[in-house]
Length: 58
Picture 1 (cartoon, rainbow, N blue to C red):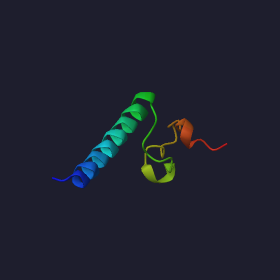
Picture 2 (cartoon, rainbow, N blue to C red):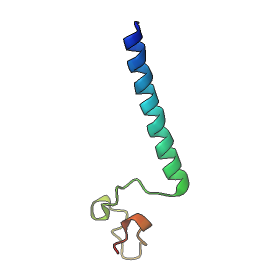
Picture 3 (cartoon, rainbow, N blue to C red):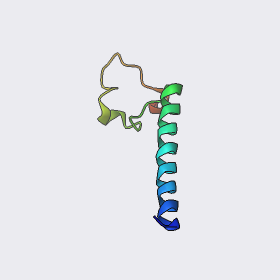
């Protein structure tokens, strides 16, 4: 492997680590991963379900 290949590999690994850390932190904080499109995810479709903070309409 040459230096360019190692640099690209390091960038890809760093991006994966950052993505995993972001998902872990969101899960730890209780944030949902539904994208706040509550009409499509099915988690918020029940009448007795309280919508997450990110999904509430102001």
